[in-house]
Image 1: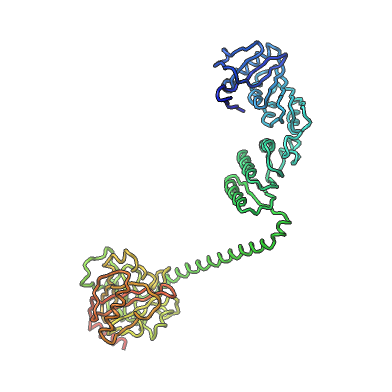
Image 2: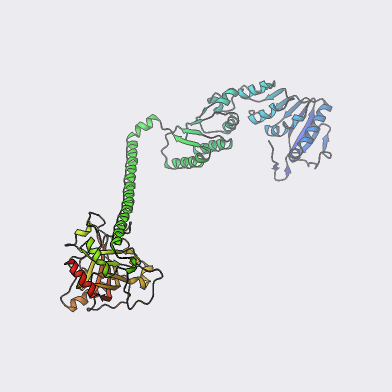
Length: 552
């Protein structure tokens, strides 16, 4: 063990004084005289005294050892007397090279440490040891090396830790699988715990009777230092202090993953009985929380799966619709005369009127096709006998909670009313039906005028509509009028819905214009509404006559 240089009173460096007396060498500290820089110039204070700095001994242990060996031979010295165990840690390793010295005397009235014992055992010349006290297991070690031991005290245990765990022999220390610590650790206990860990190979459990966190932290640190893993530390203390428990959690987290050192709280039977009701309540709350978590997880899982299936189903229906449509090349869109900026990515266009004849063959309730740029809205529009039928039926008239996009049953799809209304469910997570209509409230959509032109083609007309109002509102029916008694009431209606808009589109709307309204739910109590004005319309009378004759 290397001793580090220390300063005494801020000036002199520690030095080792070697005194020669009879047939012994005495080693002790001296701090009041200067020290030479090398061995040859070492001050010889008298014929019986030499001085070396601790620094010099550390750096030149071989030379000093050889010097002491020559000195011991010349003076016929066979005993080394050491005043402090701290000095012994430095000197005894030097004596491995000193053949004449067979006896060590440790004058300090402290217990022999395991590290010092190991150093003595490793010296093949030592046959006799005199110390203050020594644990029995160290006597066993020294005895195997034929080193005779004499102690000045009858105390054979260096700490409560050794005594409590009956660590009286080397083999008991070596094979011990569990230890118990009943009191707060003292310095002697910590020293012996270090000795125990340096010898033992089978430790698995440490029982602590006090949840003293500094001791627990120290024990974990020692276990990790000696590379001990898979150790359970069981704390047999009725701890209910939140701060202490939090500290134990942090210690457990620190050492569990890397060193597999696990802390466990073991409560007494009396404590558990006194807190039985609290424990039941706590356990019940934990169980309820787990059940709620599982329920919520199941709900979210169901929603995710259901939305995925909904999207697949709607896409499947759209593929069926595409199969009965004319080739995609026949799709067309009638651009607005006001539209001057083309989109970088072409938006989907509603099919030409000539395709509706086949759509009518699939569903005779078909009244048109709606496309909203910047969203996934690209659907044929149907109209039922009321506004309930297509709330829970799809284009194939099958039961489907997604419903379909449908026109208000009061509207005239041939001769458009002042306000044509189209509804659809807001399937936000799957994005089907009006699930992406929310996009029109986003800044990116609102700032791109090219996306504000909606295509809604009926069986009789190709039409382009420009959005002029977007807003959310509590459930009301005041925007669901389809016709008006006079121009004044219509103008009041236009002023009402324009004034609600969350964005100023600066689009003119007069009583001579037609309006398209898209309505969907935001939640049970709110609606998202989009209004657009007709800006372009073209009619193909020949196609219209064919369709009219087809539907009868």
